[in-house]
Amino acid sequence: MADRDALAGFAAALRDPASAPPSGVAARPGADVARRFAVYRNNIAVGLIDALRAGFPVTERLVGADFFRAMARAFVADHKPSSPMLFAYGGAFPAFVAGFEPAGGLPYLAGVAGLEAARAEALHAADAPTLDAASIAGALSGAVAVDWLGLRVGAHPAARLADGDHPIVAIWAAHQETASEPRFDGPWEPEAALVTRPDQAVLVRALAPGPAAFAAALLGGATIGAAGERALSIDNSVDIGRTLIALADAGAMTRLGGHEP
Amino acid sequence: MASGRSPAAPIPTRAGVGLKPQHARAILEGRPDIGFFEVHAENYMGHGGPPHRLLEAVGAAYPLSVHGVGLSIGGPAPVDPVHLRRLRAVVERYSPALVSEHLAWSTHGGEFLNDLLPVPLTEPTLARVADGVAAVQDALGRMILIENPATYLTFVDSTIPETDFLRRLADRTGCGLLLDVNNVLVSATNHGFDPIAYLGAFPIERVLEIHLAGYDEDRDADGGRLLIDAHGSAVRPDVWPLYERALAVAGPVATLIEWDHDVPDWPVLYAEALRAEALLAEALLAEARPCRRAAAERGAVIAHG
Image (cartoon, rainbow over all chains, first blue to last red; front, side, top):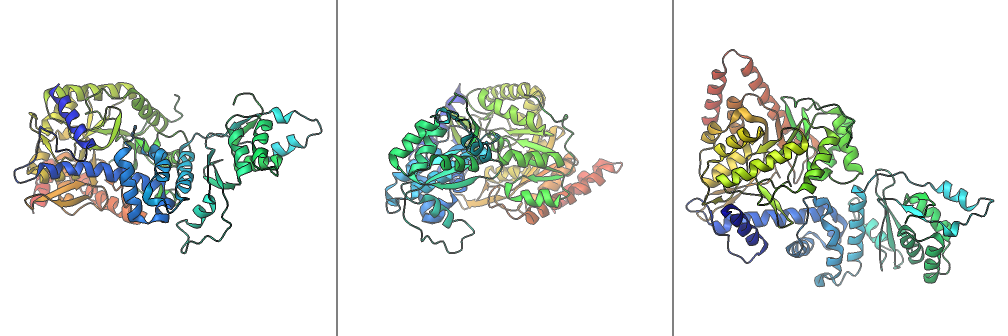
């Protein structure tokens, strides 16, 4: 029992950065217990910050290493992982970035972080076959008028959508590690990122708001008809057939048909 | 879960390195001559994708070792059955030659604390850790190795020397031990004990793997060396003689180079493995000689020299 109390005290002192070292621990004569305890605190923080750096390299490039480290440190202080699988750790980081006041001058930063969080999820998602664009095109152009507006699709387990009020895909693409002089000259228009992993490579494609609304509804389980209505309410020029084929081409779906969302 | 792989072959008495995705091409296209690859189990607990594809390809060509960092066997709560199932899935999928974990804890109240934290070396802790190791071995249907920790603090309530603790843990559970030589030097420096005496007291007959890594160095309040187990550099110069000493005592044992942060290009990491392998080859030769004592004496001379 005393052992468990010792560990509980140790854990409590780790959680509270202002706390003194726990009771019941010791260091050799001449060493400072608080300094020794700080090694554990620092190991934890550095490990989690490194996990974020690994998952959000473009976000880091956009703000610089020092700013990113400070932002990550603030996140880490309030967000402890619930599992040892650190590749899943950054899920709440984009929302934190959105509310991180010092980054307020970069309104697109949270969107880019959201894109990177989606990429990290896609990387570890389950493998599954994809529905190819030719099958969709064939079904849509078939002589028999199937009630395709009533069909649903199976979302591929790696498919993710990251919303963007800004051109997040263009900004992300311009700030890859290989870009020696990142520049962005494109039109400043909202983009969502469609992130997929049809085989082993993670793909990122930009979707305008109308097609993005279609993709979100369809991959969320809506019928093609309902998803189309949703898209057309945002942009009445959306080509539903073409968008469906683009989704298939990206590997966002596993099958056409079926009633399970 | 069915496993398509045959039962694991034993780990070769050679040097290996930690598998890093950035070395995938160098490994799969270059097919370097190396003894084995080790992975952190937690990095392969995702459902699919490139991590598993890489490990399948590497596992088809090299022996594997799975090293867990998240079971928290020394923790106040029983081993998390959910995480244990995840570990079992990795082990069943890859049939590694070795599976190892730590004498440490890292989870408290459902929160992952992301470091290998120290345990009080007491009878109740020994009983708890033995239960945990037994539960893991039962779930996996195989022996695991437990690694000696690098520590920065001790508990005033500790009553059992670490080497005795590990010996009794191994006796009680039948587990093997993973001797981390860098951890020995880190703890010995931090707590002011003799690393060679520690090796002499270590239950060396239980050691089935050795770890080598680089430490970071800081200063204590009184200016003394404070070593931190960092895995972010080459093996430090004063770890190599201790490794030779360990080989002289234990005989040749499969040896891993751990380099997890600021990971270098493949040739640099591979050169570290070759350095360990050269010392392993000497130990193998020494073992082949009729009298092991000569090897032990030679190791002592090197370690003190």
